[in-house]
Amino acid sequence: MDDFPEVRQFEERRGAIVASGADFPYFRVHQGNIRDTTEIGGRSYLSFGSYNYLGLSGHPAVNEAAHRAVERYGTSVSASRMLSGERDLTVRLERALADFLGVGDCLALVSGHATNVTAIGHLVGAQDLVLHDALAHDSILQGCVLSGAARRPFAHNDMERLAYLLRSNRSRFRRVLIAVEGAYSMDGDLVDLPAVIELKQRYGALLMVDEAHSIGTVGDSGRGVGEFFGVDRSGVDLWMGTLSKAFASCGGYLGGSPRMVSWLRHTLPGFVYSVGLTPANAAAALAATELIVAEPRRVRTLRRNAELFLGLASAAGLATGSSAHTPIVPCLLGDSARTLAVADRLYDRGVIVDPIFHPAVEEGLARLRFFVTSEHGEDDIRRAVSVLAEEVGSTEG
Ligand code: PMP
Image (cartoon, rainbow, N blue to C red; front, side, top):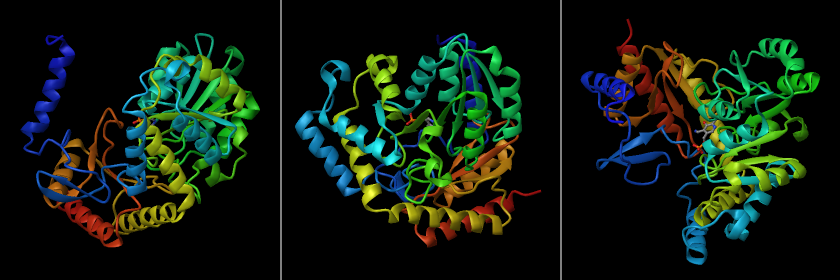
């Protein structure tokens, strides 16, 4: 495998970054938990690179719950949940998530990415079609590949195009699954959920919403785009989300009707043939869910911080694209070399933000992507935006 052409191509791409003189921005080793700040090589940085949106990774109550779980259950459940891997922590977590979402039941899996792959792979097959937003996450695309279903992307949030694809394809397939995200992680905008639900109902399609970045962050109490738009929960067949962001853990979940979840619990390959969540991860996600419900001010602070960041960035003339109502604010720079150079300058000045290039985003739409958290102070946000505006300005022309 060392001699694969793909290996050489990858090495050439990496070499080009190193040759540009910029500090290699990937796989930096952080020396502790990241909330508003992080430490690298003994230096403290203001961080906008982690999706610890509510600061619950590292929260004393969440840490304590994980410690207690390890003391009692060890570090692995050492079996599929269906066999000897079931523990009360996962059962309670699923109940708490279902209540939080306002759905009948919920299933928790060990990886968010694998949750999408196995769910889509299981729900649709060769006689079916998946219509997905063009900006859909890799895990949704991988699920389509696994399923063997036909797949058509529609331009980002373009409801007319989705309607057209449904109209012209619905009758040709057994099932049509629409896959969208609650909040898009590269652009920081929301799905037009009421419009998608109306279309899925009109054409008798299925709808799956990936709430990786909207659960815990969007809606008055963090219950995601369902809450934000006030939709009837049954308008979405499958509410998917990850435990790795606002929930301060690791894993994915699938929520919906009790009958569907019961079927998935007994048949979904990525669940049945995989180990159960670790006790520490289940306990952390459960504690985080309880904290989000008990302390709604975190979600409000997050929203205030995100609005402040976005408002200051737009006022400074930065290109924030379609970002709105989410804690994700991109600064679009277009050119990869320039994006890398600005990220590097920010790093030198003590601010961490991830540069995002093709293939994560379209060629020519390279950007810096800021994750705002409830832990950032107003001064931090003001400083970050002002340093960003200076550095973007200095590379203009
Ligand atoms: N869906 C979306 C929209 C994501 O952004 C991500 C990862 N950030 C995932 C799924 C995968 O989740 P995880 O990282 O928890 O495996």
